[in-house]
Amino acid sequence: MENYPQFLLFFILASVVGIVSIAVALSWVLHYREGLGWDGGAAEFNWHPLLMVIGFIFLQGIAIVVYRLPWTWRCSKQMMKLIHAGLHILAFILAVISVVAVFVFHNAKNIPNMYSLHSWVGLAAVVLYPSQIVLGIAVYLIPVTPVRVRAALMPLHIYSGLFIFISVIAAALMGITEKLIFSLKSPAYKDSPPEAVLVNVLGLLIAAFGALVVWIATRSAWKRPREETAQTLSNNTTSPEEIKVGTDMTTTS
Picture (cartoon, rainbow, N blue to C red):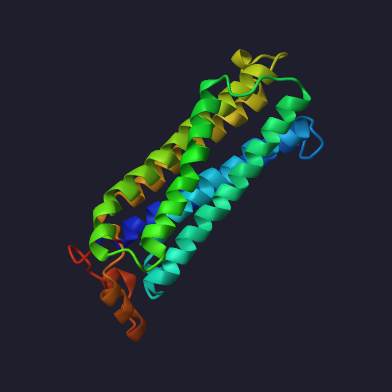
């Protein structure tokens, strides 16, 4: 891999920022909000931001870059496809649970659904995401699609995946801002109470995680090498720093 130390730095940064984002989201709902529950009350709503950060942001981000981890190149491409799909499916399950939680809360409190830009963008991402997963499994995981077709569709698969991920980041930033505006009354959001500062930090962390994932996913020098090249790694002790893949990439990695 070219610039392995740089890749490692960006991946570690992304992982740390993502984990800290989850910790901050958990601290927010446990310390400043009503905790977690499943009773139609505010504690049920709190599953929404927490599971979105864990699933739709962190797990989706890791799923996007998992192919680029050099220590996974000793695994078969099929195994990595299963891991990639599995992470996306788990992220989607958590996203669905979080959406159910917010709808149950709104209906219990007679709060209108689906009127804000946050909800429109977020639901669009939730609807598009399973389509991306199903098409990805049909085209790339099930070994019946011709290689030429897979190669032709790969740019669209990559673009749509990043588009959905960025849409989720945007929806999350709108959502946490909306929550603070509605919830903070005395002191108000504009007065920057501790909760507002904490959640603003959460927003910055989410944005930073998204930027790091997109950067890692769009560096061509950090792609997984061709399958036959990756397979040779299991037969030698070449370190990731010494693996030069350069242009020796396939468009289906």
